[in-house]
Image (spheres, rainbow, N blue to C red):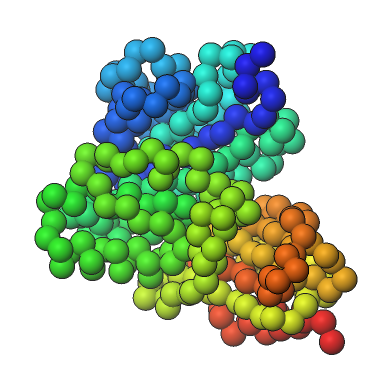
Length: 323
């Protein structure tokens, strides 16, 4: 019996602004000596697709969605292709989705939480964003999508580092941290990276992400632009009902501007950690493993998005504290 018959199929989304090196990275993944089998879904913006001809490993399953950006007009095509892939799941181990350079990865991620059938069959493992070390600063000044792609990223590959000096690289890394303080950054040339850094990363599995980096929820960034992050922490227990009301209201009123949110919550009366994450207005939360006997019970939350009001978030958060 296929391994995939026993578990959900992991999906990795590759994104990044035009010219950042996504297709080069995809080719590197497909030709690396790892023994994994991939199905590839490529998004082309235009009626005639060309990227499929640029993917050099003909043994892989390659599908294209044309005439639209995968984050909007052709999301139905993405759902259809994923459904068809389930009929041949014994032919591959995981899925790679390469978005067009102008795609917002948020709606792509939402696809895997909106449909119960897809959620049962597929596991969104992470969003990997490529950043052009030389031209990222220019892209930030002109294009909203460049900000959003970094804001959603679980991993950022700072690519083409051979074309920039150390001062430039540090400046770009700071820009990335200013947008998304919890992403992991790896410097690359032609997208070459240890695949363990971009596959099976548990970006949308909070427990696995914390095992890899226990401090990844800490820290926040100022709003140098309209996208930034806010971190909220407390050692006091939270009231479950109050938290539910607050998060529900927050998503209703500001969900479109919240790109990613993640958290570990210490709920009063619960022996387990409560973990959650969200993409825009979609929220997924559940009890996790029990708190350890010597583990300090605490709550950590991070919100990444556009125009976040730290004071309002802090007040809403504090109102959920029990007592």
